[in-house]
Length: 436
Image 1 (cartoon, one colour):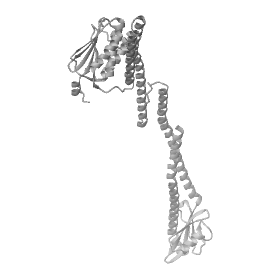
Image 2 (cartoon, rainbow, N blue to C red):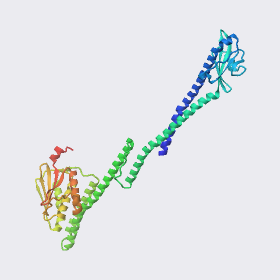
Image 3 (cartoon, rainbow, N blue to C red):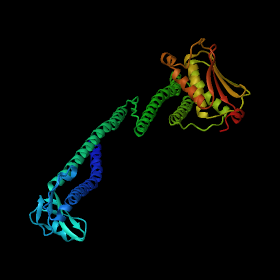
Image 4 (tube, one colour):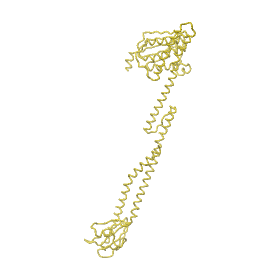
């Protein structure tokens, strides 16, 4: 790419220089021709003025001393019959001299042999008394033109060289950020999502770098969500699987009981497991169910079924009460997952009876899940450290994110006895605060 840019720049410079230098060179050549003619004319006129009296009186003329540009060429004085009287030139009149003797114009100019010649007649009254011939070697004219063209060629080469150097410098500035972008894209392709595109101070390249940064951030966020989903899914699936396993183990330990009851309980647990998988997939695809009026009665029936399946093997009880709870608008799948996490937390880390209380909390529906476990003190059950040490913070953090996604909150309302409270906006509250 560097070579192509430099080559194109040099070709453009050559083309521009050629288009400019060609007419300029022709103009320079024409200028020197006209300038040479002007010098010869001045020389011939100067001599004609000085020798006209001698030619009129019949005396032999003498070529006067010329100075400046007029002295650059040779001057000859000719008689009317065409013979050289003084100065330098052909002994017998040539075409230029004959043309000046016969012409009615003031001068005649032409290229004769290797000379540029000009002749003017010397007139006395109506009679031509002589001819002044001035000439200069064509080699001298061509030398002036050639030197000028050589200088122009040198300037053109210098311009092309400057263009080449400038192209190399700016190509380096242009290509290096692109190479850095390519390296960043390569690192991104290798899995380094912290790779960021460099900034070159060039708007177009910086836009590409910003787009690459956004892409890297999005891919990194996507992978983080996938990893988080894997951890959350494994945690959420563990609860119904554990309940199903406990039910089957209890049925095996009681061979005298009716197996149909264990089978029905297992089917219900399998249904809850399937529903949990569907909820998690919807969460992973970010296609949560739209907020609709929450069927709290049906939801609490499901909570009772899953909670009893978890607590029965531990010979613990589940108590569900309702104290005139208001209607709320939320996705049933999200609320079901939040309560499932809270029940699993109470079954795994709590003691005694687990109580689920649905009540009115002003502009919110409050659902409390408490047990008779030990005092949590100042422990933050939603912290990452707890997730790593106790093994259940992942589920609680997932439950909090689901609650916040539904416009609600999940918090530890009392450490002793441990009580978690899910707050969901009521229908009236959403009409006032969330028109959408």
